[in-house]
Image 1: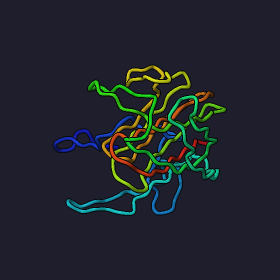
Image 2 (image 1 turned 120 degrees about the horizontal axis):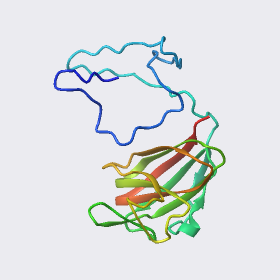
Image 3 (image 1 turned 135 degrees about the vertical axis):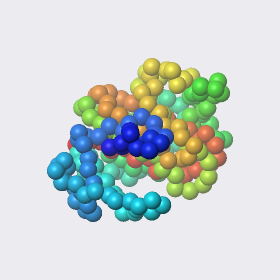
Image 4 (image 1 turned 90 degrees about the horizontal axis):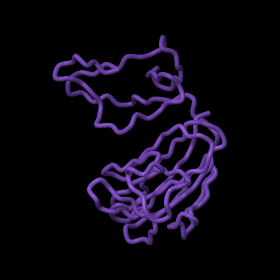
Length: 206
């Protein structure tokens, strides 16, 4: 927790939406310790100007089922050709700002961004779903969007009620974590700039 009365305030960020956790609280319990108890924690002491490394958090309650390794299958630039993924999954793909795209999203500044790669998956029971996008090579900026299956074939926006969540930071590392009800969902990967290869990982809480 951050002390709001610290000198000049205190905080972590800037952050997007808070990532939901499968458990109520998580504590740093020391290296390799996955305890979840509030009574078992190790303080992290840091001096001014010091960098403290090796502080890794193990998130309890995430499924440990091994992901299926798959490759992107083109064409997947249309809603009705979105590649079906069975979770947990790790997909190797690529996207370029010059790729074909049918679905476009209108951003807050009025510009339109094409969404080059579309994927779909089905959730059988209510649970938290984690979607992680990571670049593996190339340069540019990737963004990621999560829609219901009712999203339009050609046009959407950040105000679209069928847009469940999105991650559109200035880098190609993006994360969406959301509790989803049973149903089919569509992931859009957009090459906002440049051309990149990427890994798309989807996994769930237990």
